[in-house]
Image 1: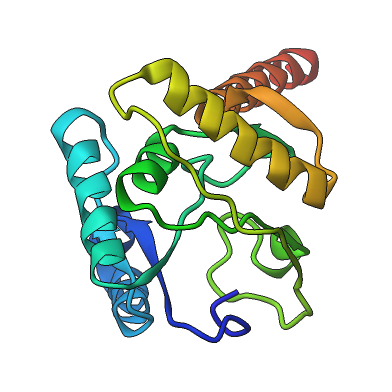
Image 2: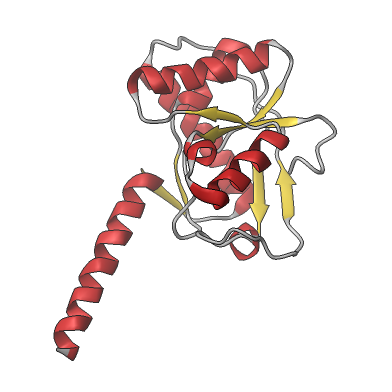
Length: 188
């Protein structure tokens, strides 16, 4: 996406991308720094608040930021419930939210693969969305976030799951472990 947008897009990237050990971690860190990405700690509480403030500072300086409202990669290509930080930043900054759907990303860079495949990415950009409201009202933040996710779902055609992607990842991992145990029992 940053290659087709006329402005520089700065992504708030999870801090683990900047702190991974070894040569692979160093290469990842240098790549993210070179691309102008900003590390954020998403572990909750004050750290998540700091990530929001970093985003707001970037927006106040006129930057264009990219956010994955699900907070993590989808484990199965479905669209999951968004985190409300995007709504809070939209209200507090007054910045437009431009929903984007990207296609073929899982084929280009499957989870766990370092080197991406060279392949065309298709993107659909939605109309800009503007929001006002009370950022202390959790109901308002949830409604706005859900509206943003609905817009992404409309342009992407993805199945929407009313669950956080991080929860889905845990369920999928648990199921895989149970299937592996069952397979071992059958073989053993």
